[in-house]
Image (tube, rainbow, N blue to C red):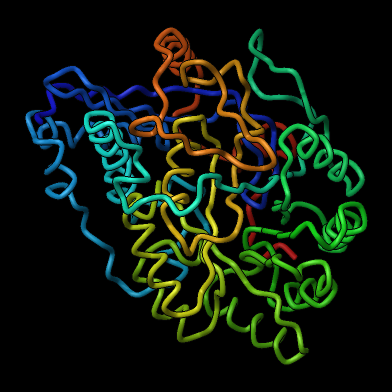
Length: 434
């Protein structure tokens, strides 16, 4: 089955002013939609990071894709797997997701792999999850993902969006935000983005959530490496109870050696809260050191930058072998990525922690999936028996999103610059900040 056409669509979607240790989200997040069309007119689709860099990298693959057999192309395009030793200079610690040049090949490969699997699934009338090993769960659990944020719902000028969640720059406001998310989507766990306010305030935020939602709702906090080792240990001790029962402390400090020190100090204090990571471990090359140092007990996978769905399954088997848990990382995304995440999670038995998702932050006005937004009910996405990923593109909507991309001034994600522009002219991302 030959590929006769390869279409790359850069788009822009409204994004609220969310805060993290990286800075502030821009009014628009950039994404890229890919279509692969076979000779018999079947179209496979995928969604990945956006901006000039990803589009250029995907365009370079055109000669290798056109005319290739869809069953063979993902083998022939197999990226070079990074082999250099792990460390801060090779991690995602200092780079926003999608901007690490060391995993650019894996990102491009993953986008093509998903589109190929969607095309194959639609041709054979099989869901993608059943092509990659078979589903072991029909429903995939996701977490609420609250952020400290400024007022605004994203977008700019005449395209500004309603602020569904309101400003949240205090513990009380953050908890109100979570209540809205849970009432709308039924989430049963909470992943809180920290690294923004003073650590004591973020400790208070987690404690307030624990009092509000109870011990039956697992809590996780991710400050994106904003804290010193000593601060990380302090937070771990203060939140010993709140981060138990399925919770974790994610990337509290920079680097595997720093994480290892935090882990050791917490264990010495009798605290077994697991440490999770999606920035210190972003490649198979990072795993040996992480295991040797006992630095990470839960890896947050992401098929977008780990090199595709099957690489996530390989990662899961390694993680299971070494007794490491598995969750899933998220970035600002639409329904195509959400369904791809759900399919790989449905077919990966060891992925037992609820996945992250930014989906509640995106507007229905921007959804590119035909028939509208993907439902999240009781905190879960249901994987149906529809072939491929189970979704199609709304081409009128795609045209609007492409036109917006042409008009917006952004061509890469830059949270630091947006922070300087709207909050503090002199703001810089400093690690550690506290």
